[in-house]
Length: 354
Image 1 (spheres, rainbow, N blue to C red):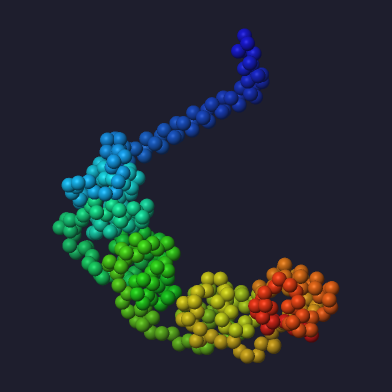
Image 2: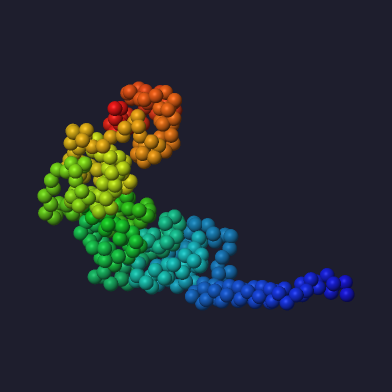
């Protein structure tokens, strides 16, 4: 009876009974889904799962080759053989087999590095494998320096199976912006490129004639950065549509450019991009015709919108002006403490003390 009274509150109302039933149902469904997922995973590689306990031990976790060990042929080894190797678990084994089935046979052991998760472990396990070139289609085998990275198309690069598809796309995209690569090492700038992937590329690829050297160059005119538009900027080497638009947007925020090196402050601009087109742009000497900031009348909202000021400094400028009167020269502004001299020097071309 005492036990019944203790748990009677659980069933004191129909709502509580319904809540308990719903909770139990959700719990059972969760357990069932988890078991179903585990079963489906095990069905993909049943031989790996069944042999996992047999082949693993603390001793086998070492990356060193066992005494008398014979390398395994990478394209014919089954999952049971691969998973038994030290340092390779079921997940990596599954990825090897899946990659082999999807992209075809490996033409070199180093190609393991293109598989997700192998970037750091590949150098430690590559000596466990070898590739029997006699089993490969002779017409598809690639030799050293067989790929011209400046001429190959994205589809052809993907078909080599050397790199993940997203890396192939980024290589071709960057090649277009740079008008070709001078050397294979330039590919280090590709987002997501790892040292292991670069080693794979270096084995098969070379940088032939740069794209800009093999096509007829467009006639480029000299552009005033304060007068040009984004369409004209796109004609310059190293500038795409997005970067051209950012240059114009930043000019509007500043009011004007007083020096062409200011576009290095544009988001996404890099030194190598700038070097490609810097000789084709300039800033006219007469910048007095452009609107300047009236430092003695401008309010916080106007000052704060300028990239070189910001709202925190704008409030300090207005507060100092209110307390001490109008600014007559740059030296008066520099009396505002805790502001670097370089900030005022950058801002000076945009100020009017009238």
